[in-house]
Image (cartoon, rainbow, N blue to C red; front, side, top):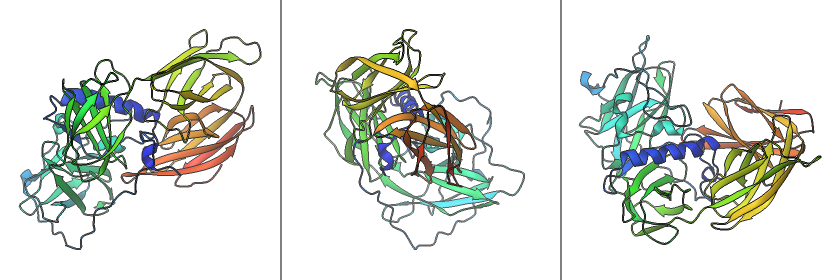
Amino acid sequence: MRAPWIALGVVGFAAIASLAWLARRDSTSSETPLRAPETSYSQLRRLLPARPPTLRSPKPTSEAIVVEPQGQNARREIEGAATEERFHFATHHPRFDELDCEGPGARLAGALRRSDGTLIPDIEIWMRRWTGRLSGYFSPHERERVSVVETDANGQFAFERVPDGEWVLAIGPNTSLMAAAQRVRVHAGAPDRLVQLTAHQDLYLRGTVFDAAGQPTRATVLAIDREWTTFVLGSADEQGEFTLGPLADEVYALQAQPYDPPLGWSVPLQVQAGASGLQVMIDPPGTISGRVVDASPGGAVEAQVLVAPQMGELGSQPGGTTSTSAEGAFEVGCLHNGVYSVAVSTAGGNFGLARGIHLEKGAKIEGVLVPIAPGGRLRVHYIGAEQEAQILVFDGSAVVVHASVQRGMTQTWVVPGTTLRVECTEDVGTRARISEKVVTVEVGELAEVEFGNVDRPR
């Protein structure tokens, strides 16, 4: 089973693009870095080509936390909860719900401490509903859409009258402190735990971004921890220089995307928080193009196309999806070097697959012919507790489906008539849980698989 950070969802790829837009909007210079605690919406899987080291957990503490009653001004009531969002992720980016509820609600309390255990006063703690990892992305522009309290003189805080549900808390973004956001469940008027935020201070990543010609370039710069629980966004200036942070004391995947032209992301570097003198190289992107043809008469076919790295050859990009032209032509660009497959499907139930396409750095591969033939159908039911699950379907090492399924819903895809491996990824806490099943699909037939709390084949 692969580690969570070498998997990437189609929805997540769109979310990365949204994060890049936010970086351009919110980061005015390399000296005003934007940091976003904990958040990937479902996966953005396949970002890294290698399995990361085991995640370190904070050391447990036996010190009791006594939360004193907070003053009436400790919690900001949010007005205008129905205000439209100024931007949207590809996932459901939530509006804030009022904390006040009909019942007494829960008292969601906790403390903010440094890594040495000392408690930190007078720091804003932000909170809103959890709807996936990107819901923990707190931009400075979102203050009117979240609930805010400050830590008291003893570093403790509390949100009052919190309704049942799932919530995400983090340090407010306008500070030199960084702590991974925490996800908390409230059930029957009680939270599942006291929240302990561990803060780190003045840890940054500093370096320079270079374009394909080896020249410094302006760029969006992104760092993500190995569990996809912390995003840090910023910008490289005209000299290619950037400063990202503050950061938690972790290893991050560091990438850059040039402003002009808007090419794909660079191959990620694994770096430790606090590193300086980093050099991020943006390689020229590659392109795969071709034509979908009917295996019988050889005519052009309109179809949906998925270009994806094969397992074992996972690059830092997920590939891409597109539709063919009326003549059956397709093209997908902004690809890093690697080994790709091209999967195509039609509304009429036909399927085609081209495997083992070796793409060199900056190359353009043309003339890939993908013949189609009758396929089967695969239906996935998701009944788990999370808002959404990411689905990958493999025929051997080739990716034939890369999509998502909402909780309580089903999705059906045209697939090859063969034995397939179906992989489901859910966010559990701030980590990803990956489960898989093997299913045989007959040509012309429908096969069904179910994932979630009741994890059994249908």
